[in-house]
Image 1 (cartoon, rainbow, N blue to C red):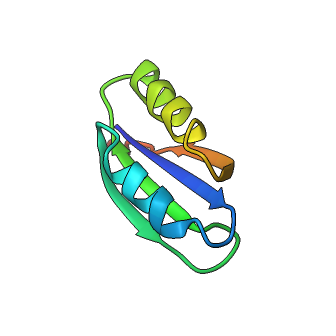
Image 2: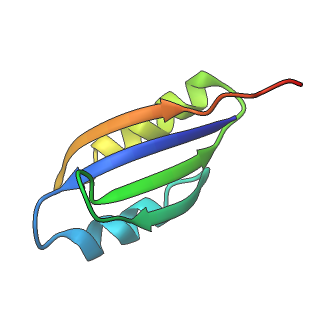
Length: 77
């Protein structure tokens, strides 16, 4: 399943946070974005506990001020 973690950071810390995000296991992509958030981190996980571990790791990064997480949905047709 996919988890999308929207992340806010302190101004001026974008490069340091970006580099830290890329080192977290299971984060597949880090996308800098315009708008309400500074980054969206996309994680591929097997279980909610894996996503929980990733989110807690993101929140431990200095200069991360806020996160919001969305879990992707599987459509079965």
